[in-house]
Image (cartoon, rainbow, N blue to C red; front, top):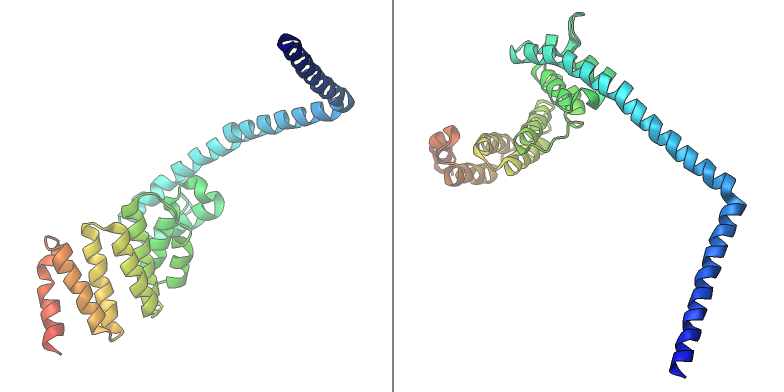
Length: 227
């Protein structure tokens, strides 16, 4: 009796499986043109993406990197306007961003921003620096500090203080002492000597071996003696 019931259950399961298979076959037969059309479309898109990557994007990246090399050399020589604008023989960072964007590498936004910063074009510097993305914490901190300098140039001292502190927290290394000292200077500019004192003491406590740390006592003494 038990065997008969088991066989009946197996038979029912088999019938259900066959019914599902039959429905799938029926669906395929009824919609095979649409299914094959979708598969062909996916294949065409895939081939298109591969072709674009191999024949358009990669050559564009190589071309952009070759153009960037000379602009970086000029930048390192401190010729910021030339590095930004180019001279007709090579593209400056401004043109590299315009023509290639991130295909030239994320660094072009940083370089362009720093060039504008050095030329005193604060708003333009922020425009480039806001677009810069990197996973390198040291470079990210440098970009944030550069934004702080731009805000300082625009006399937006509250924003400058915020970004110098942000750069210091982001870096959390020897560079942080420099950013904290700049933050302290801006805090003093705002008349917030308590904030400045706290920042200077943080340098003394956390980064005593840095250039800033070894000279910070005079800043602390100046504020404490003026109370």
